Length: 466
Image (cartoon, rainbow, N blue to C red; front, side, top):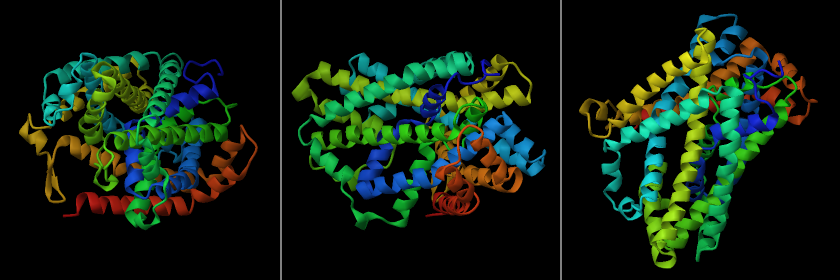
């Protein structure tokens, strides 16, 4: 069993693969900007608190469930509930969610690949023009980039767990870490970079509101890939001798470390180039910041460093973001692939082909929802505005369903699997410590209450506000 190609070969292999799923463009841009806009150091403390108090127990719950059953989310839910139809539906929701997230995340990854290649072709100055992005996302070239992204994902996932996901993670994640640290070190040498550090680390307690608290929790929850079924699936690939608690801690530390270092790159860069920046005026959208704001930052470096060096720095940034996105996309798509392979008794290649075909169709439709096709661009109406298909997928499956899925996992552990079985699975590879004891308590009481509250508030604000 230890030599199975459907298992990670080592703990570090799992951590790098899981970190690949967790570290995305939200870590690189959304996290530091959210910190600057919402209390600086106070936001950081809230974020770290939620990682320890809520996310770590949920990581352990998902990994334990996956390893104990050896199954994907649907199979795990069915097994521990003894094929209860209601819980089987909840398990199916844990498969639909990553599939739908993969659809719109493919589009974001395509944009990053396109911008990286365009910078290499010497078009940084064009990317920095105000109207360029709008034309770029409606260009026929998008579909060529999409073919490239899908091809990379297929290449990785065809290799399976050990020879595909783990091997790619061992290559790409160290590359991501090196690029991130290198860019952060460079940015910190720029004049006025200290202004960005000041906004990033100075606690501004007067800005802490319920929405800021909710934002810190959401950022921590989403950043660690909770509620997507990824950690249940990856847990099923862990060996019995792998220490679950240490693996969970390493994943949380790695993901949080990347987010914190990204802050040392993003905020100082903004303030170094635009010294009079008001953090409250920065866009909440990672898309707006990456594709519209950052090209202008790199162009503003040209008088000091020249066009060639500025383009090289821009290329490194977009490559960094692309690597973060592609590793996340691989992990997201693996969830429905593993489920289809197991539940439908398909070969990996056939299951991969079916899932990729579905993602490709969805991604094409999403890419066409930015004005090219009217019914896709006006796909729904809520909160007083028309929403495109892309908007609906983000609002429903990323912003809303994830905390609900986390709530369902807690209820499954408490009502069906029972906490003593989770405790036994954690204890199988490590001595019981404070985190195991805390997890045993937290998943039954205050974590479900918090996730139910977050879900209710999100539904209200996303779909019923005016």
